[in-house]
Structures are given as structure tokens and as C-alpha cells.
Image 1 (cartoon, one colour):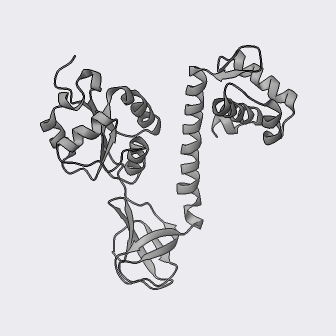
Image 2 (image 1 turned 120 degrees about the vertical axis):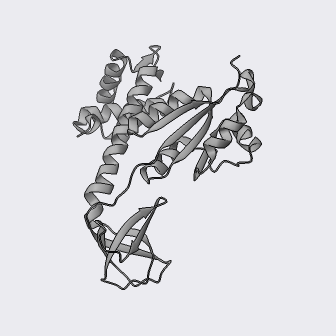
Image 3 (image 1 turned 60 degrees about the vertical axis):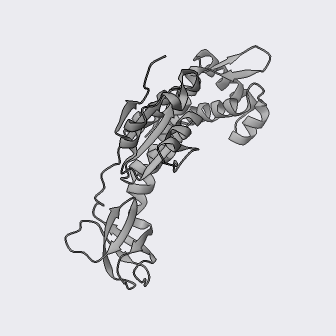
Length: 264
């Protein structure tokens, strides 16, 4: 069990810190107390603890701000919650849920099927020797979507790899200072390419590749990796630490490449 779910106290601290981050510097303690079903006094005591722990600062006039340490604690806790939710939804609930798949052949309701993950999509067919199996919940023609229940076995899936290409900010030359030939090699064969920053976008366009993702490229790469899809993120240098921290918190494989031609 993750920390924020171990006790009412930890859960309340987490939720109050979220409220402070969302509404800083002004926080109405009574509204927080009502939403969390706590007394105003309890909320006040929790906030005092957060201040003592260095997660929140205050000027003494009911104005609060989350600290750098508070942000890091929130991110770590949120990541733990996400991983726990993934465990519940994908590993625990899978045997009682209905999964959406693509039928590769004509299927009939109640028929046994084998399951394979390819290109990030789940396919239902009738192949022998496949570990993951289930039962079709309806008739389906080849190419149609079909629900599968009673999943058994493990779906063979190797996590995707993420390559990160660092490009310089405009102050250091931007797209003009990018090794375009290396970038061409990096994007070759990649199903998904994301861009973070105008410099990254232009660098990709200069080598003839329009990015698949501009907003939320980091999140998209994480989801793609969980579905076995390799991806590449071209990013300005100041975004790199945040991306790497996220990938490491998820336990995903990545490699960093510096495409700057000359250091300024």
C-alpha cells in the first residue's frame, strides 16, 4: 500500500497540499474542511504540520505557498498513486473486465480466442501456442472491434524504448545549431515522434518530419512505452530533467542524445 493511502492523516495531508498548490496564495480553510469532511481546526493543524515539514511556507496572514520540497512530494505521491491505479486496473481487475480488441478473423460469441499485442494494439485471433486467451462476448467480422472476457495467461509485451534528443535553446542557436543528419538517423523507423519547444519543432521540420505530438509529448511517450511502442522526444535542454525524472519514476528505459553542433 502506498503512503498516501495508509492512513486518513496522510491522505488528508496530500489533499490539502493539492488545494494549496491549486489556489495559492489564498486558501479558504473552511471550504477545504467541507470538501474533505474535516473540521476547520483539523485543516489548520494539518497546514501547521506541512509548514513545519518544509512543504509549505506562510507569511502569517493566512497566505500559503507550496515549496519546492512540497512539489516534489506531491509528484512522488501522485506517481505512486498512478502506478497503484495501473496495478488495480490492469492486473487485478482484468479477470473480471471486458477488454476491447481488434478481430483478425471472424469470431463468434462464446468462442475461445488468442490475444496478441502488436504496434500498441490488442488483436484477437485463433492462433495456437499463444499464452494469453479469452472468450469473445459477441460475434465480430475480421477488422471489427470485439470485447473479450475471462482473460487468462500473460500478454507478451516488451516495454517500448524512449530516445530523448536534446536541442539547444534559441539563445544557444536553436534549430540552426542542431546536427540535422544525426536527427534524421534518430527519427528513422520511429512510430511516434514528439517535440517540446519551438526549437525542437523547427528542427524536426527542417529534416522533413512533422511531429506526431507537440503538447504532452512526455506523457504520450510514457503511454506508448507501456504499449510496447518505441518513441523519440526532441526537446529543448531545460525540459530534459523533468522528462528524465518522469521516466525514471515509471521505471522506463530511455537514452539521451545531445544534438547540439557547437556549445555556446
